[in-house]
Length: 232
Image 1: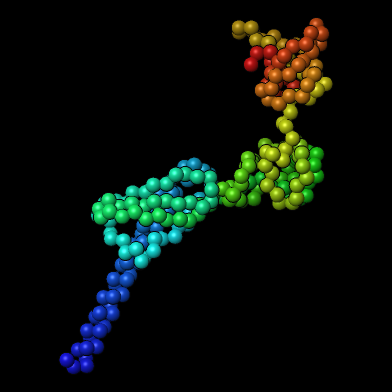
Image 2: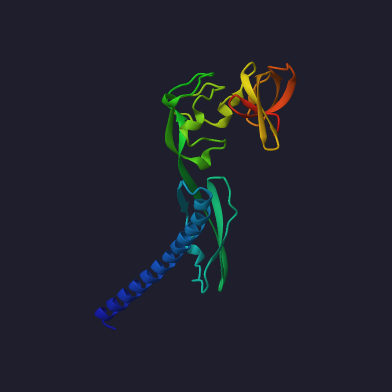
């Protein structure tokens, strides 16, 4: 066999080997892409307003996975954690692999604009929306600044700190000593009387209220600012 022929055969073998390797590396990448699409369909519904980013590592090429003759199926238990695992399974031929990676979901979240002391009554100048991966927040957060206007901090916060529900004092609609309107419904008729709150009250909380006219103390539910109702 002459030299040109040997060179041609070696070249053909090299090209064939590269093609096989390219095919072997492309299939795990395809499995990864399908798994990411599957996870996106789950988490984008869970947080439709969020910018969802999913990054998985493809299966190792050393597994030599045969191309599935049927659609690959996926199994995943949704979680609040940032790190996720998903099973990819083929029935013909039979194989199953696990892929791991991360899920990020970015939303504008209310942060402080400056250091704020305990007892601060929050206003527009204290609050800013900063895009944040909410999967890394383990407490209730806010995405609307207006929800926090006139709320009081119960702890000191640093600048650019997420404001969680745990950092806020109770949202009192009625305070002890406030003049309130007492509503009492009888069928289709609504009766309103003046009274004085004897306790602080959040929305839905039942508190003692003194009827200004009769002096009688009644139990009433806080319905809105300055208004209580004797019927729930």
